[in-house]
Length: 143
Image 1 (cartoon, rainbow, N blue to C red):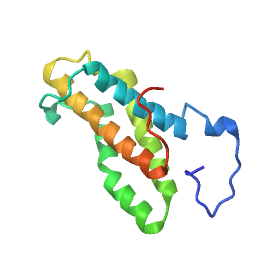
Image 2 (image 1 turned 180 degrees about the vertical axis):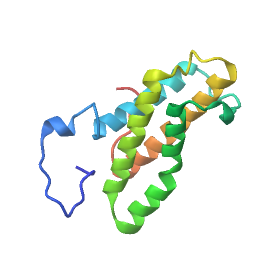
Image 3 (image 1 turned 120 degrees about the vertical axis):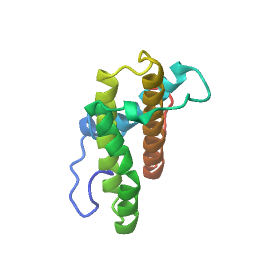
Image 4 (image 1 turned 90 degrees about the vertical axis):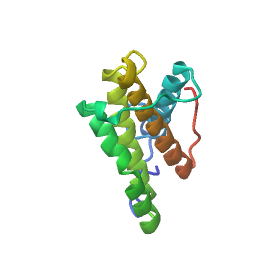
Protein backbone atom coordinates (compact mmCIF):
# COMPACT_ATOMS: atom_id res chain seq x y z
CA UNK A 1 0.00 0.00 0.00
CA UNK A 2 3.06 2.23 0.16
CA UNK A 3 3.04 2.56 -3.63
CA UNK A 4 -0.14 4.66 -3.57
CA UNK A 5 -0.25 8.32 -2.64
CA UNK A 6 -1.95 8.92 0.72
CA UNK A 7 -4.21 11.36 -1.14
CA UNK A 8 -5.76 8.56 -3.22
CA UNK A 9 -8.34 5.90 -2.41
CA UNK A 10 -6.80 2.47 -1.83
CA UNK A 11 -8.55 -0.71 -2.94
CA UNK A 12 -6.99 -3.35 -0.70
CA UNK A 13 -6.78 -6.94 -1.92
CA UNK A 14 -4.61 -9.71 -0.48
CA UNK A 15 -3.76 -10.96 -3.98
CA UNK A 16 -2.20 -7.63 -4.87
CA UNK A 17 -0.36 -7.25 -1.56
CA UNK A 18 1.14 -10.75 -1.72
CA UNK A 19 1.91 -10.68 -5.45
CA UNK A 20 5.35 -12.15 -6.24
CA UNK A 21 5.06 -11.09 -9.88
CA UNK A 22 5.28 -7.31 -9.65
CA UNK A 23 4.89 -4.11 -7.66
CA UNK A 24 4.58 -5.47 -4.12
CA UNK A 25 6.63 -5.79 -0.96
CA UNK A 26 7.20 -9.54 -1.44
CA UNK A 27 8.32 -8.94 -5.05
CA UNK A 28 10.97 -6.47 -3.88
CA UNK A 29 11.98 -8.73 -0.97
CA UNK A 30 12.32 -11.65 -3.39
CA UNK A 31 14.66 -9.67 -5.67
CA UNK A 32 16.72 -8.71 -2.60
CA UNK A 33 16.86 -12.36 -1.48
CA UNK A 34 17.92 -13.40 -5.01
CA UNK A 35 20.80 -10.93 -4.95
CA UNK A 36 21.86 -12.25 -1.54
CA UNK A 37 21.69 -15.80 -2.85
CA UNK A 38 24.02 -15.04 -5.77
CA UNK A 39 26.54 -13.36 -3.48
CA UNK A 40 26.30 -16.19 -0.93
CA UNK A 41 26.89 -18.80 -3.66
CA UNK A 42 29.92 -16.86 -4.85
CA UNK A 43 31.30 -17.70 -1.43
CA UNK A 44 33.94 -15.03 -0.84
CA UNK A 45 33.71 -12.18 1.66
CA UNK A 46 35.25 -9.75 -0.84
CA UNK A 47 34.52 -9.28 -4.52
CA UNK A 48 37.26 -9.24 -7.16
CA UNK A 49 38.01 -5.98 -9.01
CA UNK A 50 35.40 -5.08 -11.61
CA UNK A 51 35.73 -3.83 -15.18
CA UNK A 52 32.50 -1.87 -15.65
CA UNK A 53 33.26 -1.31 -19.34
CA UNK A 54 32.40 -4.99 -19.87
CA UNK A 55 28.80 -4.37 -18.79
CA UNK A 56 27.40 -3.50 -22.20
CA UNK A 57 24.41 -5.83 -22.57
CA UNK A 58 21.10 -3.87 -22.67
CA UNK A 59 19.87 -5.59 -19.48
CA UNK A 60 23.08 -4.66 -17.66
CA UNK A 61 22.81 -1.07 -18.90
CA UNK A 62 19.17 -0.85 -17.81
CA UNK A 63 20.14 -2.05 -14.34
CA UNK A 64 23.00 0.47 -14.12
CA UNK A 65 20.66 3.29 -15.16
CA UNK A 66 18.06 2.25 -12.56
CA UNK A 67 20.72 2.09 -9.84
CA UNK A 68 21.94 5.57 -10.76
CA UNK A 69 18.46 7.02 -10.15
CA UNK A 70 18.36 6.09 -6.44
CA UNK A 71 19.80 9.33 -4.99
CA UNK A 72 17.37 11.46 -7.01
CA UNK A 73 14.35 9.30 -6.14
CA UNK A 74 15.33 9.26 -2.47
CA UNK A 75 15.68 13.05 -2.44
CA UNK A 76 12.30 13.50 -4.15
CA UNK A 77 10.59 11.11 -1.73
CA UNK A 78 12.09 12.95 1.25
CA UNK A 79 11.50 16.49 0.00
CA UNK A 80 7.93 15.91 -1.16
CA UNK A 81 6.91 13.30 1.47
CA UNK A 82 6.15 10.86 -1.35
CA UNK A 83 7.05 7.37 -0.16
CA UNK A 84 5.21 6.03 -3.20
CA UNK A 85 8.06 7.37 -5.36
CA UNK A 86 10.44 5.13 -3.46
CA UNK A 87 8.22 2.05 -3.69
CA UNK A 88 7.64 2.55 -7.42
CA UNK A 89 11.39 2.94 -7.92
CA UNK A 90 12.14 -0.21 -5.88
CA UNK A 91 9.64 -2.15 -8.00
CA UNK A 92 11.27 -0.94 -11.23
CA UNK A 93 14.71 -1.87 -9.88
CA UNK A 94 13.46 -5.31 -8.80
CA UNK A 95 11.94 -5.83 -12.25
CA UNK A 96 15.18 -4.81 -14.00
CA UNK A 97 17.17 -7.10 -11.71
CA UNK A 98 14.85 -10.07 -12.25
CA UNK A 99 15.16 -9.68 -16.04
CA UNK A 100 18.95 -9.48 -15.67
CA UNK A 101 18.93 -12.57 -13.43
CA UNK A 102 16.72 -14.55 -15.82
CA UNK A 103 18.78 -13.82 -18.95
CA UNK A 104 22.42 -13.28 -17.96
CA UNK A 105 24.51 -15.72 -15.94
CA UNK A 106 26.47 -14.22 -13.09
CA UNK A 107 28.24 -17.11 -11.40
CA UNK A 108 28.80 -18.96 -14.70
CA UNK A 109 30.18 -15.89 -16.50
CA UNK A 110 33.90 -15.84 -17.23
CA UNK A 111 36.60 -13.90 -15.36
CA UNK A 112 36.27 -10.13 -15.43
CA UNK A 113 32.68 -10.25 -16.69
CA UNK A 114 31.76 -12.42 -13.69
CA UNK A 115 33.45 -9.96 -11.33
CA UNK A 116 31.68 -7.00 -12.93
CA UNK A 117 28.28 -8.70 -12.75
CA UNK A 118 28.90 -9.61 -9.11
CA UNK A 119 29.49 -5.92 -8.35
CA UNK A 120 26.28 -5.08 -10.19
CA UNK A 121 24.42 -7.63 -8.03
CA UNK A 122 26.01 -6.11 -4.92
CA UNK A 123 24.80 -2.67 -6.00
CA UNK A 124 21.26 -4.00 -6.41
CA UNK A 125 21.44 -5.71 -3.01
CA UNK A 126 22.53 -2.50 -1.29
CA UNK A 127 20.01 -0.22 -3.00
CA UNK A 128 17.06 -2.61 -2.59
CA UNK A 129 18.12 -3.13 1.04
CA UNK A 130 18.10 0.64 1.59
CA UNK A 131 14.70 0.97 -0.08
CA UNK A 132 13.18 -1.82 2.01
CA UNK A 133 14.65 -0.37 5.19
CA UNK A 134 13.31 3.11 4.40
CA UNK A 135 9.86 1.62 3.77
CA UNK A 136 9.93 -0.33 7.05
CA UNK A 137 9.88 -3.69 5.24
CA UNK A 138 12.20 -6.42 6.56
CA UNK A 139 15.11 -7.53 4.40
CA UNK A 140 15.20 -11.29 4.03
CA UNK A 141 18.39 -13.21 3.25
CA UNK A 142 16.33 -16.16 1.97
CA UNK A 143 12.79 -16.52 0.78
